[in-house]
Length: 453
Image (tube, rainbow, N blue to C red; front, side, top):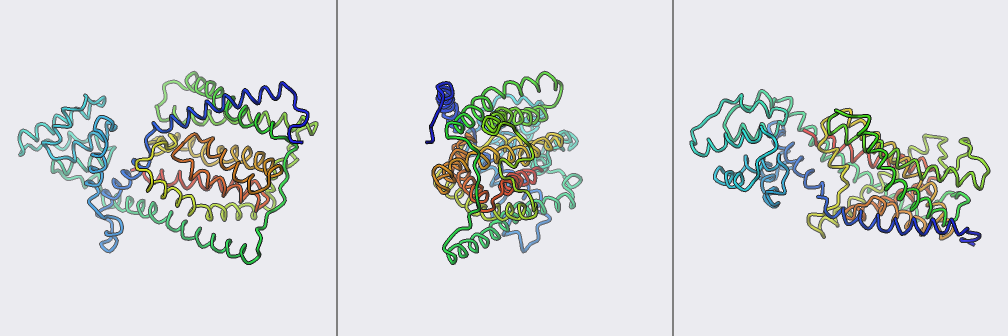
């Protein structure tokens, strides 16, 4: 019996946890609709890189990379958004790239910029409007050299030479970046599609899929409720952040906002992982009498490690085309999808290398390891034991997608979860799904890193 010999205390805790989880996830999904989609920023960053790389793009490849003028593309995209909803930088780009008379209209409807340098720049634009022959000293724009695209726009607006900053070598570097940004996904999709077709044909020929033996812990569904709802959500997502945020604010004062954000995410993930892992520890002790690290409770099966790595890479390549296809369908059905993971925006706009390292460790090491232990190491085997492998994969993938609290990203995350579940069972190794998850997050991280100018 699935619910045999359940104490009232255990049942009460599970019910309370479920109720709290319902409200937390409901609110989280609702809040995600108010978060802007990071795809807008990604598209803009790509156009900025293309503009900076323009002089180095070979003539025979220009049509592949440049369909319309990149600055016009950015300006048209920004014009679709209410001016007052734009970031200060995008407001400034809108003003600079617009016609002079239009620029002043935007200046009048905008509030004063918090960035003093931006306000000084507006004064120069007004002078240019009043006297078209006005040519300011280009040294006035040296304050903007850290933002090469903005500096490049200013050089076009005020007709001065920017070649000392936008050098040929820098432009070539930007070309290599956009080349990688465009080609890496294409190559991954191509290889993944070929591999998927090969696996499908093999399964069709053999008339079966090679599932490996899957061992579940001696846990019941009520234990899963306590683990996911009680440990992962109530203690991990609600209570733990209070400690991690307080820790950073108490011990890491006088640091940059970027580093502060990254430390909060890093420690936030560590503190979030502790409660559910402690619950697992005590759950194992309750039926095994002890917890021994030598025992492979979650079927990592890391030896031979080469096989686990190969299976992880195969799983990653195979699922990429399907996840991207679902994302493409969602984008075609719903314009301006909101709800992107806020971590993506933080990585995209981060210029602190220490902060980058912390985010990299969190997204490509901590998150895959912790999430795979919970969702594919414990939840999937338990569900598969009680309801069958197919339903186990589907339900665990749905909970995995739901737990990320991003309504816009739920469909692709659900497909990714299915791929991770299949890899876990097909390989018989949790390490394979950890590697696959790490590669997926790593590719996303790499793409965001390349988009930085």
